[in-house]
Length: 101
Image (cartoon, rainbow, N blue to C red; front, side, top):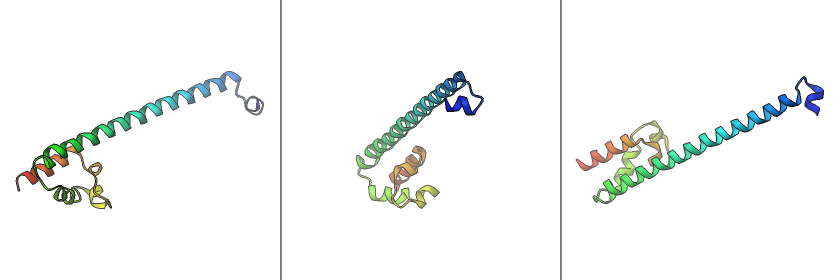
C-alpha cells in the first residue's frame, strides 16, 4: 500500500518486480550451486591425481607441497599450500617433473 500511495507503482508493477526478484534469486542460487559442484569435482580430481601419481608411486608429498608454492602468484602468496591454488595442468606438470628427477 505504501508503494502504491507514495510512488506511481501499481499493484501489478509490484507483483511483477517481486516475481522478477524471486526469479533472479533462483537463477543466482542455481549458478552458485553449479559453481560449488564444479569446484568440489575439480578439487576431488586433483586429490585423486595426487593419490595415484604421487603417493601410490612413492614420491615425496612434502616435495610436492614445496613445489606447489612456486607455481604461480596465488600459490606464492598463500600462507598454506593448497591444490586450490594450482590448475590441473600445473599440478600435472609438477608431478611429471618429480617423476623425472
